[in-house]
Amino acid sequence: MPWIVAAIKPVLEDPAIESNLRQFLLVLSVSLGVATLSRVFSVLRNIPYTLLLLLVGLGLAVVDVRLVNLSPELILFIFLPPLLFEAAWNIKWSRLKSDFFPILLYAILGVVICILGLVFGLQQLAGASLATALLVGASLSATDPVSVTALFRELGVDKRLTTLMEGESLFNDGVAVVAFNLLLGIAIGIEQFDVSVTLARFGIFVGLGISLGGLIGFGISFLTQRFDIPLVEQSLTLVSAYGTYIIAEEVGGSGVIAVVTTGLILGNFGSRIGMNPRTRLVVSEFWEFLAFFVNSIVFLLIGDQVRFQALIDYSETIFVAILIIIIARAVSVFGLGAFSNWVTKGENISMSGQTILWWGGLRGSVSVALALSVPESLAQREEIIAVVFGVMLFTLLVQGLTTQPLLSWLNLLGDQPTRQRYTQLVAHRVALNRVLDRLKELIDRQEVDEEFAKYQIALVEGQLEELKDDLVELQRSNPDLLTYAAEQIRDELLAIESDTYAEFIRAGQLKDELAPLLQDVLPQSA
Image 1: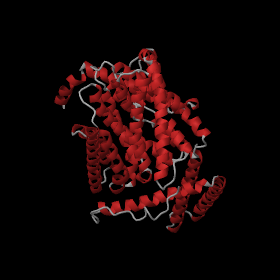
Image 2: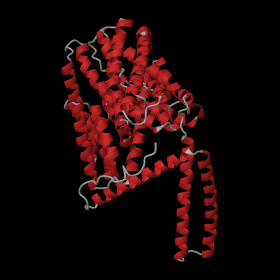
Image 3: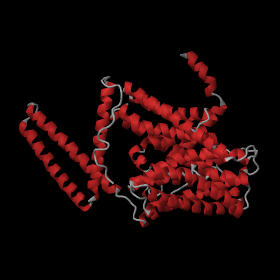
Image 4: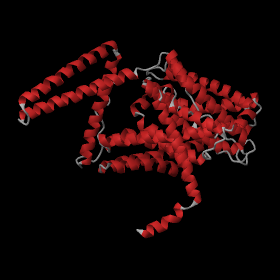
């Protein structure tokens, strides 16, 4: 092995590599330290950890401590693919499908409304140039409500509202990136705006992204049917997230749309036909960790990149942009929401739900990446970056930190603590019933003293009676738990059906995936 050491020694001794490694470890230590402290101290638990990291980053920026140079490539090629994949992996297609129409309205027309509002408003009210207005509009058209949706899950907010917000963010990230690339040529004067050409290029970007994402997603889904090796399947999902993005960008498609498509397919189809429950759990926990890891770094670095002097210099333009963003977001959410309620025959999006969608439309990493990717040759680059950072800070700090009080005021806070208590009681009951079965089995096999076993059975049965009383009392005081329990049972039954088909395929008894029978048979709770 000495030749291996000799080969890598020059690399390890490279000062640039050592410096970059030191920077990475510093960023990692600070970000994970802050994220951990937010869970340890109760006074910090009401602040989403991503926003707390942003505040720490801003504190570092105040004292002019710059951890690393945050480049658009770092966000778009390193941070964005895993965040997109994790969100797509976890979103349920059944819920997404039921609200696909309003999600597409918000993701496509909402982006257009935001861009048009900013282009018109910044030119008319702030005297900004066309280049500044176009690129600020495209950069800020992407929503990034990661801290809000994390808050939704923690508080048990209605799952439909979470799906609407996450679904819009997943798709409008791709639309915003495509719009930015289309408008960049116009802003720097190398292209002329043509509606037909723009729509054709948009169709190509999106079409290539969906096609490539679908091809990779289904390919990996059928591949994982042939073996059951959790670490390999976990690694395949990681490779698919980055590989899909890079390949799509190389062939001229939308990497964002491609990754979202792959994540949706693997999370809703591939994980069911090609992974057993244990493997799905391993992969899901891996992506949960990776999303936490990446978010911990990216929000700290975003705060650390703020240049306060630039915010002061362009404060008037930033103020105008904030007002326009709020108004444009209201027009898109309430206007398109009313149109969706009128067109669709399903459950309407309530006014309180639309209010949260409006106020929770935060801007984040995608907006920053797009602003930083403006060519340095453009004279207005500093102004564009300052305006985008200013608006982003307002949405994250003001809107992000006031979302929970707004949820409380609108009576949209969920019953997550109660549901968690119910799940814990059910888990206790299942565990104790298994203990009883084991004790009875030992008696039947005469492997234990019968009197001793019966005494243990009496103790366990007494504990089960207490659990039964606690469950009855919890259900009596919280009637909505019955709906939650029915939903959990339905999901479990559907998973059992899918797992059974997957077992037949892995055993070679089936070649193709069977269409689920219970999906439309079992009633779905509202």
